[in-house]
Image (tube, rainbow, N blue to C red; front, side, top):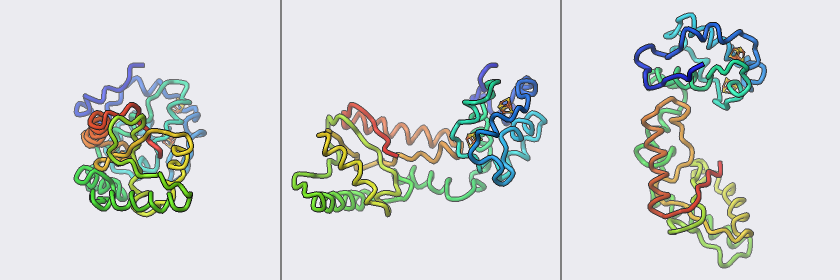
Length: 231
Ligand code: SF4
Ligand code: SF4
């Protein structure tokens, strides 16, 4: 089966092909491996069937396609090669942005504007990271440990999950400890450091591309050799 052509979304909203009606034989392999199958009536089979039957707007307006975590297990296990994850993402793409559930779209907007999902200003980020690094050095007795922000030519550039500097700072110390013990050469950019791209989950291609592009820019600007997403 040919893959979904997501560039032609406008032609038919969910870009499903008629042959998918025959491809999916409702075996349930996808549903049995899905970690959220049954939650709020979610079942990946239902989605495929509803779209094949032309219930596109109903699916776009429904809450249940947003229950999916987009882990990809269903697609991996499907014996027929049905591209469930692309389909789920496409359903989300067509939802009006003000109807995206929860805080996901707000987070995307915040990330586009400020470089991170929690709108942490650059100065505050630098202050928090240096302060936690000082605390870490003291706790571990590592007087030579310094926060390597914006270090050029490092072996590893790490992105950061916004929730860590926002309120779970201790969770960063674990990987700092490993880096220190391994003598790793690493850095964190002081701008556009967010490693969690919520646009992936909201189906917002443009925003996702912008955020990925910023990470690439950071890699180039800081001449980093490898990229690490610790989350
Ligand atoms: S695993 Fe594939 S073929 Fe089976 S029900 Fe799910 S989508 Fe259809
Ligand atoms: S991608 Fe979604 S539907 Fe597929 S297994 Fe994961 S949670 Fe379930």
